[in-house]
Amino acid sequence: MKVESINGQLLREMLAAATNWLGKNAPDIDALNVFPVPDGDTGTNMLLTMRSSIDEAYQTSDHSISSVTRAIAKGALMGARGNSGVILSQIWRGFASSYSNKEVSTAQDLAEAFQQAVNMAYKGLSNPVEGTILTVIKDIAQVARHQVEEGNSDLLGLLEIVVSSAADSLANTPNLLPVLKDAGVVDAGGQGLYTILEGALQYLKGEGEQMQLRKPQIIISDVQSTRIPNLTAIEEEPYGYCTNLLIKGENLAPDKIRTKLQRRGKSIVVAGDDTTIRIHIHTYEPGKILNLAGTMGTMHEINIRNMDEQFQDFLEMQRERSLEVDMATVVVASGNGLQEVFRSLGAVAIISGGQTMNPSTKDFLQAIEVIPSDQIIILPNNKNIILTAQQVQSFTDKSIKVIPTETIPQGVASLLAFDYGATFETNTQNMEEAISSVKTIEITHAVRSSKVGELRIKKHQAIGLLDGALLAAGKDTSEVLSKMLAKIDLEKSEIITIYYGVDTKKAEAELVAHTIREKHPELQIDIVRGDQPHYNYIVSIE
Picture (cartoon, rainbow, N blue to C red):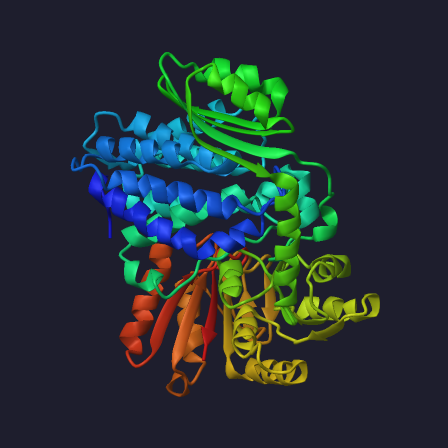
């Protein structure tokens, strides 16, 4: 399906669905919230801000993109909560400015709106910090601009690429902000923005009903993967008061107000126009902030919260979440798509690795030690990683069990057999048995010319492996995949899942799936974006 443009009504419906999607994930986003202050409210603040936006958007009867985005921006400003909420209001203000006087949005319009959102978001802060929601929106804008410059006019396709780039940018935030790296989490505000965009995309793709049955997933850091922040990395110190208020008046100057506040606190965000200003600041003396604001206009929606108390609540929330994890699974996978698959199946930690990217024992230990569980199950998903994983037990007091999965499909089958209600021993037994329920085909390219048995292989030729055994070669990947499938008795199979790699286009994967369906209409054929390097296709046969 190709989408040339969307109007304001459709955008409103997309963001309403996205708000509900964010609502499912708000507590998990709260749990990531370690910057600028570990107060555990980013997800809640962004959700409340979005709800205010949607409420305002439904008040307008004009369905033009300009009218609806103007209402969304107004609602966000009036209902903005916390640092993340005010920044989010600036993003929507950028959209409204870019869409001024437009009836609909094209792909090019969307790219321009993202860039204007970047300008507004950075402008609202006195001290912009990279590795936050700011970086995510900036990276999105760059990717969107590049896409339209390359001639991409499909708004749906552009949004799919935008969401994928948001996930990549978000996973990289710990590399840019040390406090995130120390805690082993991605930026909470960036996660919130990603979840909103993901929800909007799913609605545009016609998946509104499916969204009711699913839950958003937290993006896992490439640095250190765990769903629960490392509490030992968070230093307890006085945080003061999170002070939020709205000022209404005439001839208000956001830039001048921001300058006046710079020496009075931290995490300053000032957003609005000459009649309405939203202020967010962390300060030890909220009274002085109110006295200053009172000289500028009338004050509304004053909200002052003791961040030291919030921090203690945050720690307690983390401890409660920690108690929920009795048994945990650690998975090795490379590629955003494959990592997303394992997250959706309940993997607590994902370590980036695989072919040519074998993680060390230290990498396993770093992931394991921050998981609040004494029973850990590891899925290496590569035969060259199994031995390394088995060394972990000698370096930790936790109970470690390595399930000898050699391929991604074996890892998926094994994780599907995991049951939180079962014992550690029962789970490990069931997960090992599940390995034999699946066959794996891997399609890649030869790095050198060689001869394997009777098979002569030329450099760069497409080759196929069945459960690790090299069995076929050919001029292209689809031809080799067909040869590999012919070597399997598919009459005993029910499901074929095709994970396509980072170097394979979705259209190519869809064509391959269509060809298999024509030959084997009795089989269920699924295609999944794996984004794995090296392998054009990883195919699971069950």
